[in-house]
Length: 79
Image (cartoon, rainbow, N blue to C red; front, top):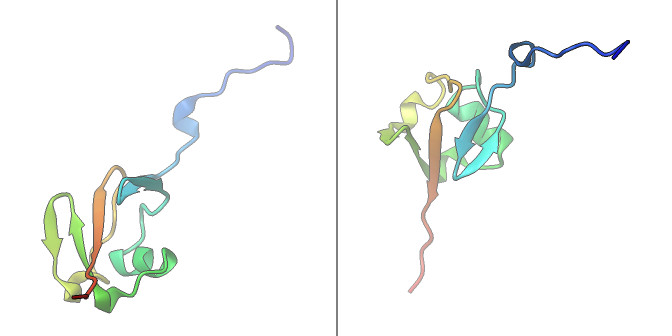
């Protein structure tokens, strides 16, 4: 076919991570940036990154990498 060129998939670099089972673009952001972008209150959640609980004081230090798995847990009170 003339005029058709192949696309190399490695040229289409999309950095994705899984947050609470949903795939989002967050690679390269800190945990704190991701929480803010997704509308979470960092003071009211616990973050698990690749099966490890992350201390709140590290949210602005840890940079999310491709294929990381993140769970954001919120606590709900009630009685």
